[in-house]
Image (tube, rainbow, N blue to C red; front, side, top):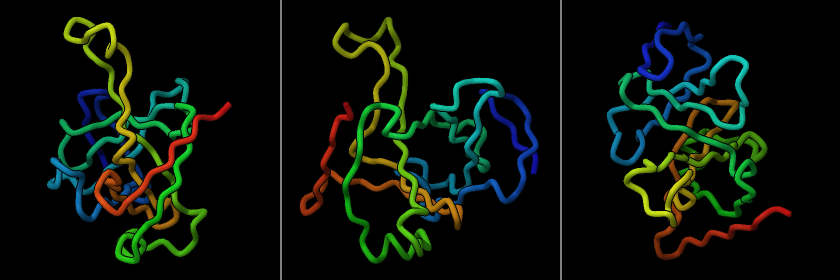
Amino acid sequence: MKIESPAFGSAEIADDKVIEFPAGLPGFEQSRRFVLVHAEGSDVGVFLLQSVDDADVAFSVAGPEQLGITYEFKLSDEEVELLQLKRPEDALVAVIVRKEDALAASPATAGLRANFVAPLVINAAARRGMQKVINRLGREIVLRALD
């Protein structure tokens, strides 16, 4: 399938590389199919999660370990079913990162910002994903900085 992106132009993507987010992402519910891409020859620590449904929707994502963070949280039975998750080791976690506009940011917020309270959970085997909002009552997150 051919996709267009303002970030990298036109690209041919194999259908088996598409990740379906059945519920979309909060605020972007109309975009349900995404691909993970990165510039050839670049550091693959940060990927672009590009919508197949809307070329203007794309997010920079990174593994939390790239940012010195590990997660511990539980998925509900409904979330496991949504992801079609059969084995825990098939679950990948990523966080959306964005660069602050240096002119608009204060010195305290300049640089990269990451959304740690709503990580993406992707079943790599089934190519299904969701955004797990974990800052609600009854949900707990443990962030541990790596040494």
